[in-house]
Image (cartoon, rainbow, N blue to C red; front, side):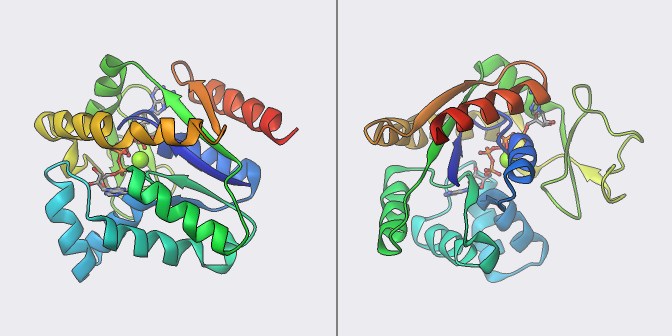
Length: 218
Ligand code: AP5
Ligand code: MG
């Protein structure tokens, strides 16, 4: 399956993607995680991305689309993928459609994770991620690691993302409403959008998403 996950910052995209990708045996492709890996490896792309991410702005389309395309062309993504954080505006959505149609492929579903704004603020405020891999995500009260400050998965150090400060989160939410939300209408016109109420336990949200995908697949 080829699936896109959308939702505001802190909605739980990364958290859900980890479980969904495992259940569906497809790779989880997060442009945010790819940028953060570049930042920790101090690549040119990482330096460029950081200057936008720290302000809460989108990284320019040209580099983002090229990076996403490169990742989607890896052999493990041949039979499907779960996109998290891409596309993030209508031009990226159009680029993705074009990319897929050239290969005779199309998306199967767009899952829209719906969470009230006061909840995403709480989720972001308590989030801690792993230095080794930003896909290892915890929360100080909702998903506390067994040992404070230590990743349960790999033993790495847990820290707070640079773009999780109150001011940057405000910009990220604004960018989401103005630039990313329009892709929901873009995909609604293609009949692809399934709204998933994303309040409640992580496993409940995963179950709702799996049920929705089974319906879409039927
Ligand atoms: P990105 O990394 O994609 O960040 P985001 O979209 O702002 O989303 P987050 O990762 O903050 O939240 P999430 O929905 O993954 O939530 P999570 O699962 O962690 O992008 C970062 C930046 O990179 C962008 O601002 C931009 O600059 C750049 N970028 C990325 N892609 C780009 C693109 N395509 N184009 C241009 N620029 C791009 O969960 C949050 C917390 O809540 C965690 O602590 C988790 O444990 C907890 N939680 C999750 N689910 C639940 C639950 N059900 N109940 C309680 N707690 C929960
Ligand atoms: Mg994420």
